[in-house]
Length: 252
Ligand code: 13P
Image 1: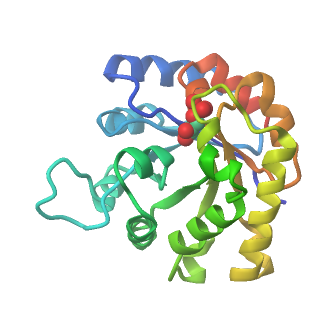
Image 2 (image 1 turned 90 degrees about the vertical axis):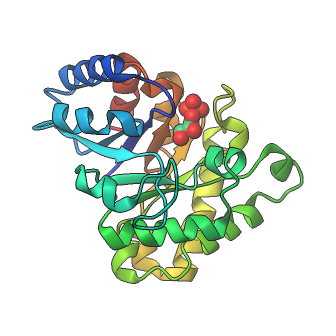
């Protein structure tokens, strides 16, 4: 049985006092939560330190939203995997479609980041997904197969266990347009088959594949109950304690 995961990607939201408010609210809501669902929050870099402090003794895990693939150097504005690790970060989102489209990250660069992350002990939440144009041109499976193959290229079996895959169709992100449970399940099933072909059956059975894209309290339960959907990567609905908690509860 795969343990379900619900991860919140805060994106570029929440300053320091808003971070304190949201985490306090979540901790209160989750204080009696003893389910098998793994809960992760990924605040912006500026909130990592305070988040780590506030999450002490809580069931919530901490992730970041991006990192550079070098350990250090003249890379103005960047943050390394090693730096994140030194602040007690456990997960890192890599390959998010906003990084791919706005910041021009390609599969090669994302692969370097994935390999660097696992080498320092960070667990990647590795995102893939097609655009609307790609879907309309029947390219969905080709695109996600390429993203998965290139993004996870050269990864060792030892580190493969630490990867969480997130399927986020670009057309469903922040648009209010969710993939239907059967549309999402179709892709997740295909991904699991692909993982089996590439890495073998036991990895395919154990790897968590999350769905992301306009997941809300009112659609989460149906999505999360599909056989190949192991939870979600949540944007908008993770910015309020109430709605994030309701999404988490939909995975129970
Ligand atoms: P929304 O839930 O706001 O659509 O964002 C999804 C997402 O991009 C999570 O990484």
